[in-house]
Structure formats: C-alpha cells, structure tokens
Length: 194
Image (tube, rainbow, N blue to C red; front, side, top):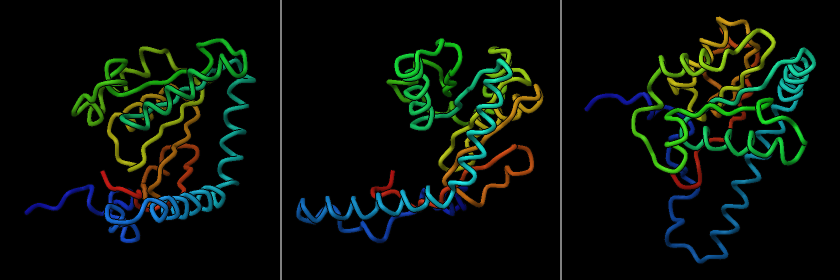
C-alpha cells in the first residue's frame, strides 16, 4: 500500500474526540460540536497578529487602486465566492474590486468536478486571464495547504508582482518561501472527516 500525501495532514486525520458521534444522543453531539468550534476560535485568535498584517496588505492594495482576489478549490473556493459576492451588497463596492477564482470555474460551484484542484497550470492561467498586477492582493485559501490549483494561481500572481496571502489550516506548509504572509490556524481535524 502506497503512502498518501493526504494522510499526514492534520486537517485530513480522523478526530479521535468525535469517533462516537454517530451513536451519541443529539444534545451530546451539539455539546461536542460546540466544544470543537471553541478550539477553532482559539486557533484563529492565536493568528490575530498575522491576520492584522493581512488586513494591512489588503488595505494597501486597495489604496493603490488594486483589487483583491480570493483563490480556492472545493469548499475553500465556494467560501471565496460567498465572500466576494457579499462585498457589493454589504459595503457598496464595485463587483470587480473583490473577486473569487475557483478551480473548475462556475460549473464547480454546484457540482463537484474531480481533479480540477490538481491543475497547477489552470491556476496560473486564471491569474493571467484577470490581468493581476503588482497593485493587487491575492489570497489563496487551501485547508490542506497543498492544493495545486491554488499554488499555480499564487505562483502566477507572484510573477506579476501582486502581494500574496496564504490561508491554510496546515501550519507546516512550506509555502512561506514565496508568499508575503501565511495565516495558519492549527485547527486540527474536522468534527467529521471527509
């Protein structure tokens, strides 16, 4: 049996604290999920200085007339789409100011497209199509830290001189060598794996 690149990632492990969740009474499940959520809040709080630095990077890009791009695959990409879609509604910003780039494009929002997250070249092409420049900020989001589509997009953005923020749940990522900032709350495994 071969060794999977996924099995050592903290986000992909089985959560030992929730193994019996399928046999618990409903109130116990709610208490367990709430306790796990508190761990996430604590992990995010520990990253507050990096989060503040990320805000400074984004503000600087916007002051220079730049845009913000959120890049992800799967759930991370869908969350980026939600954030970008909310900006004009909540803050009255132009739709092009904050944009989302998702592996697989619009079709992947509602229907899973297998393998698109592994396409490094398409990630780089997505940045080129949007004419990302040195005035822009690009935020890559990958819970595992190894999504090739996101890495390709960040590599393409770096070549254009954009400021790069990488958000992951894997503090051990080696991407610190070519991004401006890594925000990596150590949230551990999900309540339910998968």
